[in-house]
Amino acid sequence: MTLQVEAAAIAIDLDTRTEAWRAEVGRDPAGILWHRGRILVGVMGGDYVSVIDPVARRADRQITVGRGAHALFEGPQDGLVYVTSRVDSRITALDPQTLEIKRVHEIGGGPDCLTFDADGTIWATLRWTGRVAAIDPRSGAARVARVGRRTASCSRPSRWPKDAAGSSRFAGRAAASARRGAGTAWAVSPVYASLRMGTGRDRLRRDPLR
Image 1 (tube, rainbow, N blue to C red):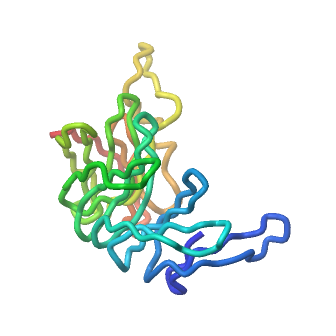
Image 2 (image 1 turned 60 degrees about the vertical axis):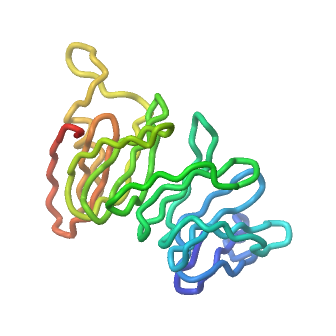
């Protein structure tokens, strides 16, 4: 896990539930991903991904991806490692083997979290503009829909909700069941996007992608 205040990533011993070791990675580390025997950390207070060797228990490489490096995700179809940079407002795709930059998607609004459609489309929450974007991973073309303030995370359901006619399209009851606590769950079919509103009110809206 990452510790933002302590600028470190730590490993937890699951048997003793205590800290096993830690590695310094840089100011305000955020997302963390285990990838092919390495640990990748987005350093939000910098502009890079820190690469940790878990055997040596230290960071031995930095990959510059853009200011506000935040979260990391593996593409389920192309295997690329996708990194969001909220400040420079881009998504960087890394080669899964070499971790060299393969492509960069410039997308306004501060991309935060990602998920992937069945056809490989990248769905991104845009934190600063309260929108969700659907991005073609090959062309970079994006369609955007507004969902609300401070868009945070999104996920694709493992089973598509069906309507009364048996059609696998968005069902309002499925989105409602995705709500968590006092926050809000918004749905843009086929992806659920959650927002931190701080009001305790739950609302639901569907906006077409533009």
